[in-house]
Length: 309
Image (tube, rainbow, N blue to C red; front, side, top):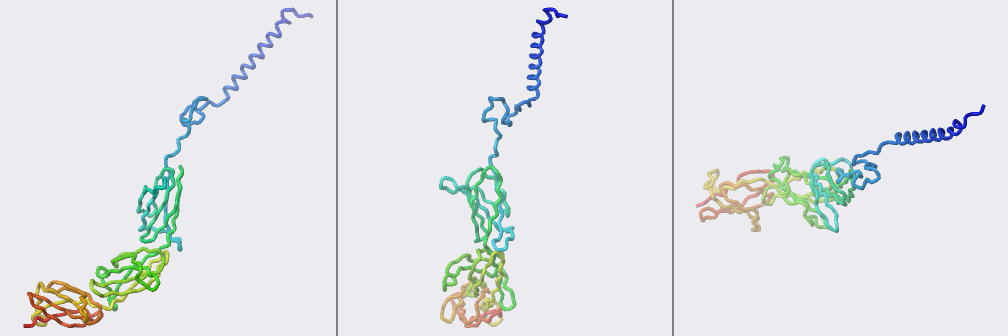
């Protein structure tokens, strides 16, 4: 049976419409399946095709530099007595930008080139560091040890407040060529680079002294005990033996050769002298009195000058 002409001619038109409808649906489905673009300022894809550089992630403005120090020979951490300095290196200039005394400082620094310096007493170490935008941890090694000094007279310890010492670096035959530390107290811990040193102690403030050579090793504390052959004496000007001392007396202690060892004013000043022979001169109200005496190590006593007629 032959179909009507109107039906046959309508089939291509309907088919075309169907195809067009299917294509439109496919496009719509494909577009819907695509992820939506983020519109936040922190998304580098946000803002559509017109997004600029201002929408890029913001980098941190500084990094953190974590520092610690260790003894070079033993690897033991140094937990006290450190002084850290950080210098920025820019255009041939060196600028101090940070100083800390903590054992393990953490320092916020902007990107740049730096020099880190750490000192432990007279010993030190330095290290160049480049900071970018991240954190950096650095360990510095210090070749150093410590020195403490004690003094005795025989078996009796010298009070720390009455003992002072100096440290020298020997050069050739000269044991006191270079002074490193002057007038340190017995209570002090002197931190030094490893090496050989010469120590001179002084008991009192006259001529009682002792010397020794010692070596300092990294990571170790050397305790040096020096024996002084000396005594503590009390000077008195009296009318008779065992009598009351005259106030306001001026005393001068001399060697037999006439060199002045110690001078003092008072009723009974004390003086520490090395063992040996001495002469004491006492002056009071225009009159002068003298006496010769001998100092024996460890024998503390009174030296009485008798005011004759």
